[in-house]
Length: 408
Image (cartoon, rainbow, N blue to C red; front, side):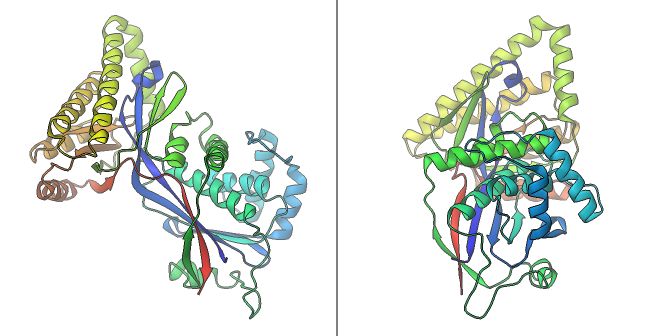
């Protein structure tokens, strides 16, 4: 085996945004936009390639061994948050080695590498992604799940020594930019068999991904990395997450307004409105909770029918999308760009709401088996002509996946 390929999906919150902060139910689903990491043995260096971001990093293994001694990360049976002093040392190491302000994603990669592969084997990790960054679709969680699964499985499957193909060592160090950054994908490997990940392995992957998310975001909820690991549907209420039946069979049209939003400010603004008008806002939160539960029941009814002959249920789901958008708008978290997306898609019979914090960001339109796909394409065309970015994706599919990479 030449190495590993791992892949993890992004996520969309279908219902329950903002209300989840007040102990109400939120529904999150995996989305068919994925991040992929190929990891393989090389000689002498650890190489991290991010061609989508036009970034690449390379560290001699001797330097990382010295960093391992300096950080003195203990062997961990159960993943633990990175101590602040360890992160400070990794950040200083990166500042000295790359001469730029270190990215939290790279810090996270090195923390998981030192924790899961303490003997510091040389390797190359190449990351590509379909998930737009900063759009509230769980891009960092998918990256964290790839870090966790790739490094964990790579070490567990007996890798960690430089690969010998009979003609000498494979050495990516001199050819990183030529073979990978410029040409995109080296042709030395082919995809082998898919690995069967046990429930226990997924639990460990999810826990390590959560540690990575803590490095990137400080106090994540755990929803994003859970959905990315397990796939399907996850409900979240009062700090408790519950996996649900998958929703394979439904699609969504995602529209990125390309309007930046500040989640912290939006959450604070809802809190201020709640404090000023508690007797008004509390019933809105209760309505969102009931709406989320109604949507979950309707999804499950569709699942029992294998999403066949579900026209009544699909109509109900569309109505719930419309109602939820109205409730969110009453909380002040919509935006003119989102309203324009809703107006354009409504002209083609689609039902659309914001997802995530709102204030811009991304909206989704429900696409059921009964939706006229020609109208979806026409809506997509008009949205893109209006300056928005669109993605059509399945929802509720498989979470983290892994394959062998084999030499050809």
